Image 1 (cartoon, rainbow, N blue to C red):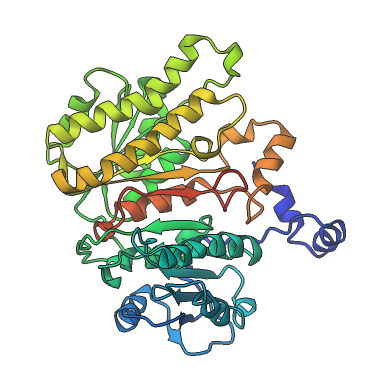
Image 2 (image 1 turned 30 degrees about the horizontal axis):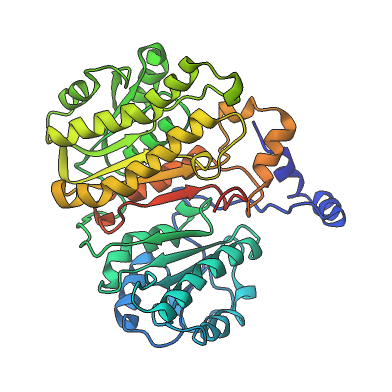
Length: 440
C-alpha cells in the first residue's frame, strides 16, 4: 500500500501544512538502483584524537567509490575516526570534528563513526567509547532529510581492512533504512571478491520463506549479486514459489521447514554445499497470553525458532555449509522491544538473537561460517498493509526516518552479511527499522 503521507509531504502545500502542524517530515529515501549505485557526492574523512589507522582507513575509504575531499561544501558521507578517543575529555574532539560540518551533510547522506570495543581493563576508555553509542543514536534522530548515522567498532588489535565491506554498505544507498546502529567487527580476515558488482558469483544460497514478501526480495537481491539461488517455502505456496523461482532463474524447493527431514532435503538440493543459508520463514499467531491456546504458542516457536535451530545444527554437523559460508536469520524488533499480543512471536525472535550471539563465534571457529541476523521494523508488505490504519501510520512514523521500510531494505542487509568479504561481521543483529523508537 502506498504511503500517501510521504507523497503529501513531497508537495509544496503538504510541506507547508505539516510544518505548521509540527508533523513529521519524511524525506524520500535514495535506495540502490542500477542508475544510482552510489551516493551522489564526496566523502569527508575526519579524525578525533590520535589515530593509529588513519592511512589504512584512507585506503579502505577509497574502495567505496566515493571521492575523499578535504573540505567539501556538501559531503554525501562523513567518516569520523574516533578509535583514539580514550577519555571523557577526548569526547570534546568528537564535538569539534562534527559540529562545524553536520549541517552541510547532503540530503540522504551518511555519517559513520569509527570506535573500538569498550575495554574491560580501562574504565576511562570504556566510558569514552560507550559514550559514542549514545552520541550516535541521538545524532541519528537529529540529522533528518533521509540521512543516517552509525557506529562501527573495529577490533582493538585489528586493521581497517576488515571494515571494507561494512563501510561500502553503510556508505551506499543499500543502507537507506538502517540508522542508529552499532556494528562490532571481529579480527577475521575478509575473503576475496573478484567482482564487486557480483560479489556472490559462484556461491549457492538458499532462502526459506521465499515465495513472496521479504523472502522473495532477499532471493532477488542475492541473485542480482550473482548467487545461484534455491527458494524454499511450504508446499501450499508452491505456485508463488515457482513464479519467484522462474523470475530469478532460481530453483524452487517446496518444503515445510518443520519437517523432520528438512535439513537432509536441503542438503540434497545443494550437492555442492551451501555458501549462504537465509532463515527467513516465519509466522504470526497473535493473541494476548491470557487468551492464547498452547497450539498457537507452539506453532510460532516451532516455525520461527525450533526449525531454525534444528536445521542449522544438522546442516553444520553434516558439513553441508561450505567454509566461508554465511548463515543469516530473520529476527525482529519485536524480539528486542516486545509487542502487545505477540508474546509467542517476540519470544521466538528473541530466541533467534540468542542463537546468533552464541553460535556465531563457535561456528566461525569450528566450521569457518559466520552467523548474523537482521531485525526488521515496520516493512511495507501485504501483511502490514492489512494492519488497521492508525496502527499502520504509527508504525510508519515512529522512527527517525518517519516512514516504513521496503523488503529490499532487509534484502540489502542480508546480501551484505552474505558477501565473502564480510567475514569480520559475525554474531551481529542489525536492525533494519529506520531507527525505530521502540527498543534500543
